[in-house]
Image 1 (cartoon, rainbow, N blue to C red):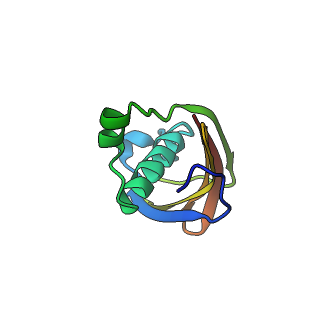
Image 2: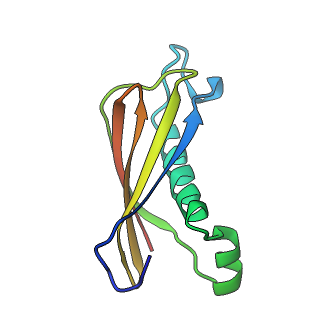
Length: 117
């Protein structure tokens, strides 16, 4: 990941399992929990690329606050589904990183993007 806005994409994948506490009475995931999994995907992507997010904050003072988050829910995830969180960094500029991805349960995607500064 470079500072120059290069067009190469950095991608990763992580898996999460829907816990009972993340669902409503019908066993359907509460929508806000997807945002937590998006952050898991972003953090794990950094780890997979050899970057330690916590150490980066300590050493550089660089904090990546999310200033925009969007999601399109196409179908519900349910209790005990294993979700694949696919994360792709689509652009990095001096003060902004855009991350997109999808969270799939049985090939049912939720599309999302985050903008962090």
